[in-house]
Image 1 (tube, rainbow, N blue to C red):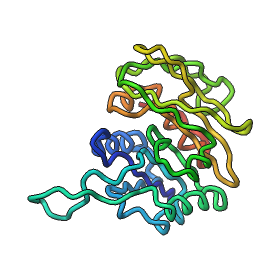
Image 2: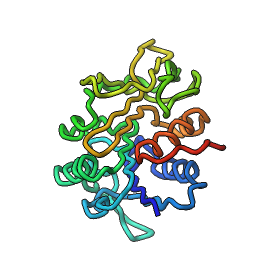
Image 3: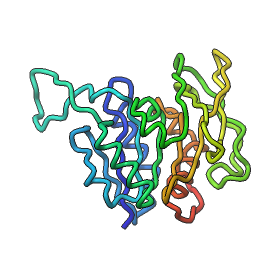
Length: 235
């Protein structure tokens, strides 16, 4: 059984319910995959990912906006814990480099502000500007994650960007923001030790995860990161 651990959302700007629903729907046909969603930072531990085949994250640097509670009704709001502790970062790096765990770093993972994780991704982050429509284009025609996928449009998203730091990292595609006309790298991948990493920056809104071309990129990226054969993607 393939074990996938995911932590997405958990803050004011990123809807955890939407993100989990879309990821589960995307991989629903993979009956041999067990997808475990972490719904609060306090539950993410090095032990949890010690036997994971793939880690998916979309999480910025701040603690959870609302702490998890077992109670159905509460009379106050309490801030939660931090995902990107040094202990968790060290565990992620160790599992990627030494054990070969795949790492799918989505959207605001680059805003984690943990220097060791950013170094693992081999990029320098560039902040987004306004939420706006994006074109996704210049697909890498040679890489299995993007080969054969054409230019497509996302109706609303944040355009994070990166500068790739080394020759060992491959650009997968670029994005162009409609309003401010900024052109930027939007996807990349690399091998680090025994593991594979894919960074994909679109993903702020539910609209992004509804685009068939982006769904296929996510599908391919997850399989590639785990060094698995990539079956055809079917909506």
